[in-house]
Length: 610
Image (tube, rainbow, N blue to C red; front, side, top):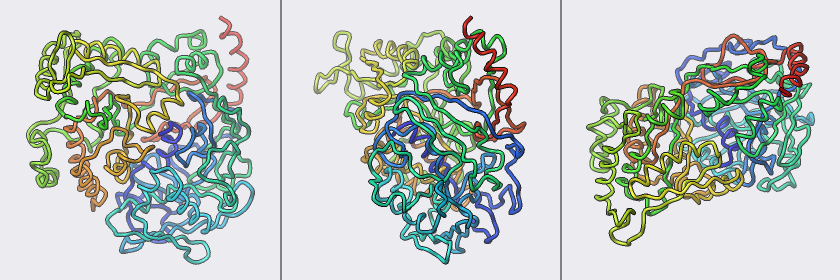
């Protein structure tokens, strides 16, 4: 899936929320039965409602883009393009499972939970001034499900029909009441103009700016190189509580760079303003510059309470070489996290062991209570270790001595039918040498992967590292044309339907899906469906832990590491609210200090020449 698409879909699809019934006057829905913000709330706590508007925020992107439609599988969408579309509702970033109406002024869940009614605000408008209507919402839903990215078909699969209700209402009817997050997933749907798209091919890539409705519109593009958005001066939702204090920059520009190394140098040279850093080495040493020493660049670590999700070396299970779980378990011994953390990461990270680390959803110890009951019905279909031992990836002492691990790995590989022939590991039946390619799109990752391949070599295995450009990488990942790759799966505090897209058997066969590893497991499928139907928070936690535990012992990837903070570097022209959202970095709540902006621009030329 394209990176920009992942970001956009992450915003509109993977929040994983569970709905509860409320009266018509309730502004939203929440997992826990109580919304933090009542019907008369003025703004979110993590914004400055009086933040001034103005200035320019320049950001970066890697690679290229060739479309302005992020809702279909074709093309690479431009960075930030999701900001031109409004959704029925928006998620609160300081609650784990709540959302509030944006295009919709009311959200009514039927008492039997078999339908939800969204009532459109009278003032909701597209950028051309035309009103948003129930017909637009219905057309959007039907088009996304029929022609949009495959994710939409998965997410909206349990909707049996959508119909207009009264003058401004849209009712979605469900197959059953068991998919309890579905009403809120529908709330995260963008609203498109039926009239605009009439006569246009929705499935094609396009560089014609589509008609939007959001706080920004596309001002200009340099295809594949940059895109500039301008704030809509008469944006219809500016004064709504859910939008107050947000989207403060008058202009947002994304410049594209070939790779992250070039992008970092461009940042230090003052070519753009804000950078989210995911490299511990660069965070520790890469920002040293005259601008940093002069105080013009600020580095901040902003804590968050997000589940870590999972990043790791992912196996493509569609490759026969990785079919045997003993092989997948064995290769994990070649990743020496402790050495890497000490020598490459400046001790910044904690090893990830769970798909839901840093949260109560992570499976730890051995299963007990409801989680044990859930797993018992699969006894004999899942590894017995699920019941007897906590999953933990291999651990070393940081010295680089991994001999004990290599012995354990080679024992597993021998059991799986691989033995040494000379200095190479070969398959007992076919004589095939054990070799595969590790696909990357970021040269910075090579320093992490190369020690891993050296350890593989000690096991008689050849791991060839191949770094390709962004466009080629995206295409190969979409078509599952890889052996091993570094992948990341973001998780929310309320997982649900998105798990079908991550690990569901049906998604494994759909090109462009998020089931990159090709997981096809009937137990996993059933656990996902039961999780989606969980009746309350306690049951959701138990079902998530059960799913986590089975995924852990599937050895579908080699877990990496995580940090519970956002690392943000920026030129010192921004202000931000005193309270940060718990579950997002919140850059859209920042604003530009005009005096600081002038001062930074005046001094920038001096320091960048040093």
